[in-house]
Length: 461
Image (cartoon, rainbow, N blue to C red; front, side, top):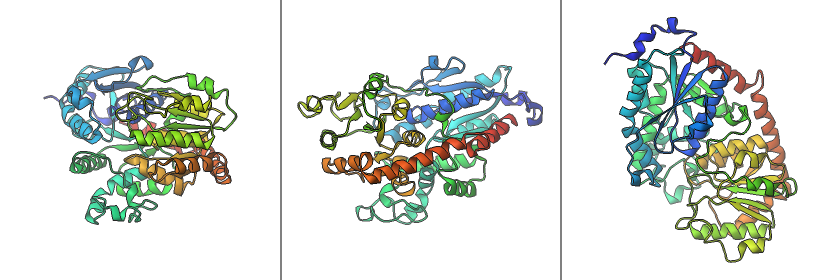
């Protein structure tokens, strides 16, 4: 097959004309959001944007009228698309999408464009895309949607296996992880899957193909992860661009796959400043009915106003609120408000919000830092465990529940963050961190400079 890339000539001939960028997000909520935010950032810098996406969890293109969207088949059966095994799903997608992605890219490259494609930007987890990009002589830059520290945890899997820390033994949970301070063994970013070898294989392929890419973009900030970025720079001989936090470049915009209930903002308007605990565990985590009951009673006994997000399917075996204790809402007498999904950025920015009980996905953690809201950490899997340890033990802007969902521990954690002196100290620290992050985006700031470098780099292709 003729290489469609060849018609664009040499890099020198293309320089200054290569203004189109093709982006390919992984179809999971925590990955779609930052990729589309990055697309917005690049569009604001003059690049034309094309989004290739799977049928599964396809983004709402009507929210992005300036972008061109192409949908590719992902080959998932109904049962495969509804699996709770994320690793199995992503492993399958990396096989199923090779030909459809290559065909879509070939089609794009075969048509003479006013703005030729400078490069593709794919999620790091789409490891197959490196070989496709190479076949078209097309630069591939990758976006890692988690933070740098958790990525280093994933990259260390071969070493951790060799040292006997993987698979994890119950007796080692509290032990420190060599080379990865401040992580404990229980913080290693594992993800539950039927076959752990699938996870190890996926991570190994991801790391290998990142090293073969043309550059690595982070939705993170040098001021948060300076030493970790230095380590990545030493281990990966490619340009690195920490240009986050992405969501701070524009007024709140959402590519949420779930419908947001705006009623919670009206309810927040009726609450005292910094009095409300916002509780949300993201788009994937699930709870047992026992855990949900402990959460409810912990919130009740804390005597703090709360906004609780109960996503349909959050409580296993339950449609929505069936497992709430009888008469719970009546007993709260307006002190609590429950929604199926919330406009998170607006909630965190609201004057009434004083704390965030979170699963510590990176997007949520970063949004909380950017609004100066201290956290209660209850990580479920993967990078969330690393993020939670950094929140509680490195930046010291939150309390770690250490996986205990027991009403007494919950009540104690809420009081600590919301009303006690320790919580005030956390608030002071996170407000200071918020200011440093915001400064990074301004002229001369670290993220601003990294973005300028990225724009120059893409324009040089």
